[in-house]
Length: 450
Length: 77
Image (cartoon, rainbow over all chains, first blue to last red):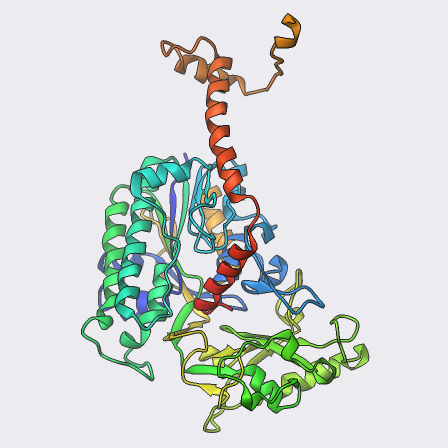
């Protein structure tokens, strides 16, 4: 008889909240488990972003091996991009392996699992699901059952909004929706392994972190907004206590995140910097553009452009390589020199007041044992992730106090959490140090399959 | 004429243990055979899946744009 394993995935949960008391005891029940758990600091992947991080965790493969470097990718020579979904995941996942071994598996909200794939058990897809009209469950008829029983599924909210009251209301509405569904599935269906990722945690962090983290450079005490994150934690805690009491007493409980979170200091206009440093040339005067202008293909003077970039939690830089890009100008023989020079220049980028930044610039082949799919030429992490990269142009400064995509309080951090509560004590409790995200699948496999 | 109206059948394999479970399950339910039950269940499931498929076949350009806008608003791209 296999012991049940329930994995509670809290997207972007950092150690300082779950392990170090920043939750102000909102996780009162969960912390009693965590205190008796094997506690790891979880080192996320490059890049520490929801897609690909959860799939890295549940396949044990690096982003390079998966060929997933974020949500969007571009085919060589094509300026436009495509968005990845579950069809791009070719490797075995924990649930596909468990299914083949005859175990019943429940998967809820793991990004990106849309469109759903068959498994021995049931699946409800994640926030990347286009809309509720799509088939978002496996088996397909589970969708109707869920909607009849607990109401229509809410996949996500819009959190980059100044209307914080609505954001908070939507957030709790979504969380409650997920919790009702997971409680129903976990108590009414057969399973040995249940993986549940709650995206509401990440959304709450992004929308309300400056009202919560007293060390945030723009920390603001607010009578309502400062309570949103603690309230969300409490709702998770109370719900989980209710669920846990309905599970078999010997069930193993894992609490894990895909990355951490920390205050966003600002966004750095990477394409403007490339323009300033003669790597990128526009056909128009950049000073005449409206702030926040998208870098479009027809804006670029390709004959005089060496590189351009995408923004996001990290920046992806592409070389205008001859023979690869439509109007490539960098000769292959100069590719290495160009990469090396650009890398040195990016590493030297400093803060607005000349303060030193900890910038990391990598070629994908330096990070991964295998580089599949459509990788960028360079992957750029600014000031240890404290600064996001803005791909838009037309700004009066390269240093933007806010994100170019709308209000956001937080950026991702490298370190998340991974704790294993084994009520039978076969896994010893205590602080276990660091574990790489690629090793979690094997650790969970040992629990499930041994 | 009679031959033209004749319904054609084929054989689908299921594990014997599953066959036996179904056989016991349908006792007293009105289903007269395992085959009748299996055909009934499959018709139910297939009609639902076909409806889903019509709604979901390929992602339209509008849906693609909506996904990209959503990911932008979420700050991922």
